[in-house]
Amino acid sequence: MSRLVLGTRNRKKREELADLLKDLPFEVVDLSGYPSAPEVEETGTTFEENARLKAVGVAQAIGEWVLAEDSGLVVPGLNGRPGVYSARYAGKQGDDEANNQRLLAELAPLPDDRRAAYYICVAVLANPKGEVIGVTEGRCHGTIIKERRGTGGFGYDPLFLVPEWHQTFGELSLRVKQALSHRGKAVVAMRPKLREIK
Image (tube, rainbow, N blue to C red; front, side, top):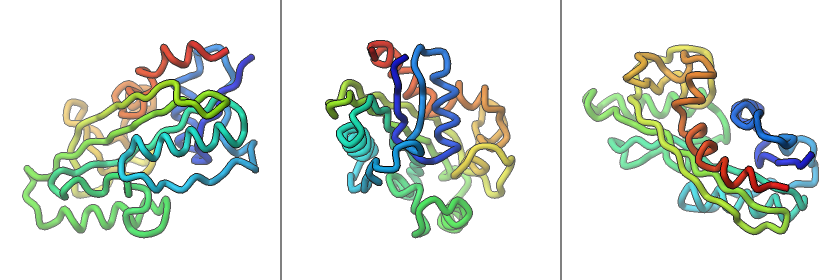
């Protein structure tokens, strides 16, 4: 069976991606089994640049097919922030609580009609030589509410309301979130390329 390595050590992200790929005929693993895989610096100024850096860097280092992605939250009312800095918006990488606090504080002076936001995910598939085979993008539009709701998901999910469902990503079931999410859309768009893995 072929193997696809997800370019992440984030357990919740791995679970989401593995669930989206479970019907495909290969083993899906993350970087936890590759201690020598580099911690790629996200020095790009766009989501695509960062996803490419991760996919290519990891594939070249471990010689496997790698699916990497970069994703984040874009709030037009905040001039696109937090954007590519979503995971380290408050300073420390992956501090969801501090990131959410900063987002709420920055949105507080704005009127309700300026709280629109969207999640974006750019996925990049690289072959074992580190050549980019596919690039896809997914988006999900919503609104940032003023108080957290739900305990599911991660990152900004408890604040990200999907208007059509009247629920946040923190409240939606994994199945519904997968169907709606930026990450789900990017992975679905990548499926034709993933089927080429031998």
